[in-house]
Length: 93
Image 1: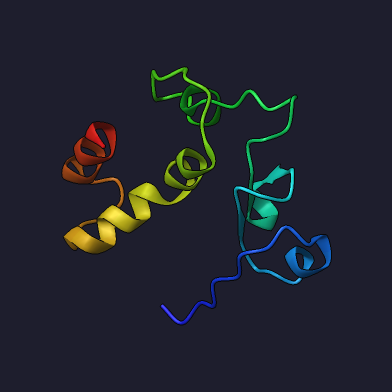
Image 2: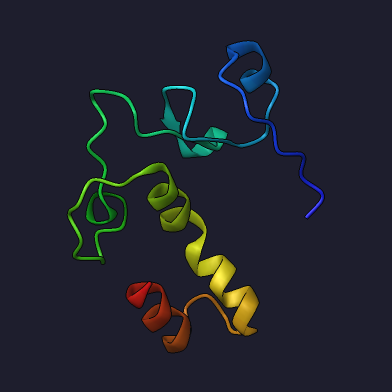
């Protein structure tokens, strides 16, 4: 909630960011880098979460949802991440 949003493509500024979405040319969830613009990028929900059936290549927003959607929904609903309600809503969204 106290995050500063920085809009830039400057690699030096991006290197200082905690989370980078839709720029930077890399997908590395361990470093919180969520870009899908590389020619080699082919990730889908199914490739990242084999329990899910969707094979459409993910956008940067899709990558963020894939990694954080359940956690966010659980917090909003006051439910555990693995609850049937969170799982059903995650799959519907």
